[in-house]
Amino acid sequence: MTAAQANETAAPVISAKGLNLTFQTNDGPVHALKDVNLEINKGDFVSFIGPSGCGKTTFLRVMADLEKPTAGSITVNGVSPEEARKTRAYGYVFQHAGLYPWRTIGGNIRLPLEIMGYTKSDQDERVKRVLDLVELSGFEKKFPWQLSGGMQQRASIARALAFDADILLMDEPFGALDEIVRDHLNEQLLQLWARTNKTIGFVTHSIPEAVYLSTRIVVMSPRPGRITDVIESTLPRERPLDIRDTPEFLEIAHRVREGLRAGHAYDD
Image 1 (cartoon, one colour):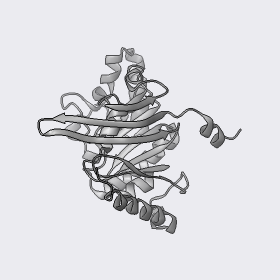
Image 2 (image 1 turned 120 degrees about the horizontal axis):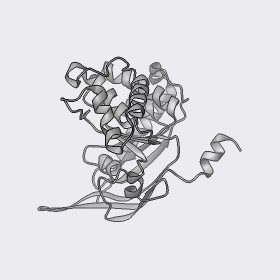
Image 3 (image 1 turned 90 degrees about the horizontal axis):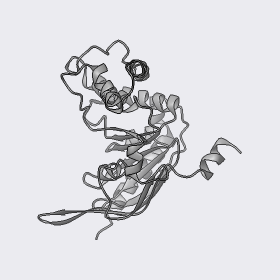
Image 4 (image 1 turned 90 degrees about the vertical axis):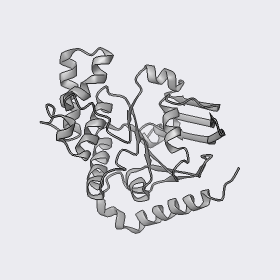
């Protein structure tokens, strides 16, 4: 059996079926997600794209047990998101680095390891390893304010990788960065994914970023968030930045754009 065939027959890492989430507010119910069905397999890089408020981040937060669905079901590694969280199945990278300014970069990366009870020697080894992975070796004793925004985000990714979770959930981590830095971090993230074979869920507003990074692109409609298209990438896993100028890349980007337009045809 080939690796591709094994991936097809293996149980999905994340499986959502008929997922709904409604927030109760003083102004009435807000329907964030409606009838979401999706499977994510081991080693997938899946990007979620859609207009602001369409439920992309909410869906990611449901996977991470930060929000509870009001209907339907979702499993992570075959168990509930709560059980997956308790077994440290995933790392989570937020929109902003969220580093504690009074702790060094190494100290920020160590924090979850300290909470989890890792030994000092194990912490040292893991901090060194993940700093190498995100190309921040030598910055362990620096404080966040001494690093650029892009370097801080890399440190945030390193913190999420420190305890070896197989799943990495990333909520628009590069959205606040300039285009040059963002391109560089996109390249580094692909290299990191190739080295670690993590399963990645990635929220973005950028069509080029979604197409460049992903094995699959999930297009979502305006609220209530529905999946309007799931696009399988035909691009090779090794992707130089100039692949964005190829007809294959532009064709996928066009389909994403069409999916976003089609999403506006949905209504309650």
